[in-house]
Length: 180
Image 1 (cartoon, helix red, strand yellow):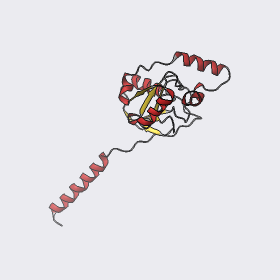
Image 2 (cartoon, rainbow, N blue to C red):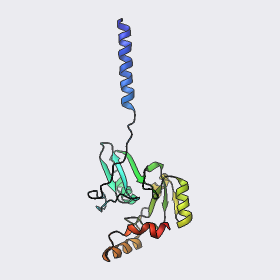
Image 3 (cartoon, rainbow, N blue to C red):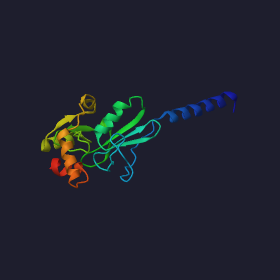
């Protein structure tokens, strides 16, 4: 083999290494540990349910939240952090969805752990079906930027009363109250 062919083979090999090294790695959400995971914003326990959300930072660190509103607040307060991926859960199935691919519903009567009243769905049709049955407003990922993210103060008071009366979690009744 002459020198020219050897250089060509070496160049091709290095080019292949460079191309495969530049492929975007698939980022997946980490499992929620209900025993130890706490919301980064409100410090409440994160349950492995349809309200859990998660951010994976560029350095691989996973940050979990108990409500999409808490995740939004963290993003607003940490604009310099490099986020590789953000995930929300489908309200009906609790399956993870990349945040930008989900469709959202906002409604004053939707109970969420921190009373932000926003839930997510895998498809627009699923979100619209929820709205048809329960009321609410359809939101896209882009709409979340303009959303007010105010907490429902009446719902917060109701949840505080429930906690004081021995209920462990005000959002635990959300499906029976708002989904049916």
